[in-house]
Length: 135
Image 1 (cartoon, rainbow, N blue to C red):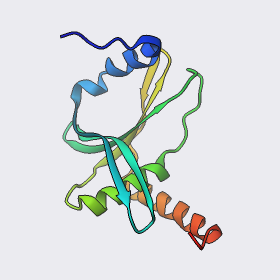
Image 2: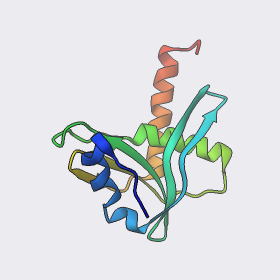
Image 3: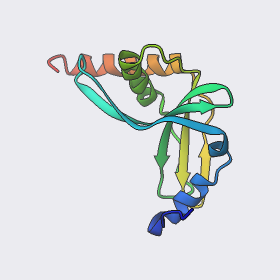
């Protein structure tokens, strides 16, 4: 089966699709759009799927330099979890993972606790509302 040509993005794509993580990852949804009508926000989660007996929420971050630093994605993951719970309350997440795609290197982040991600999102939302009460 012929694979699409990644062109200028081969340095990111090839290490990503060849990473052993994706051998065991079975996607349920990719680029899944959701919204939160109460908060007037929306977004697309990158991937939801099964990995070694666990249900995972996966966020893909691309970075332009191999030496770029990783950072916390807990708030963003929490936002996706909140919307996922609104639309699919029967889905139980075991963990979240951030996948870092850099030129020539893909790194799978450590397991992130979904409950802590939800707390981080709620804290960020509360802070936003404090400074934007009319939103």
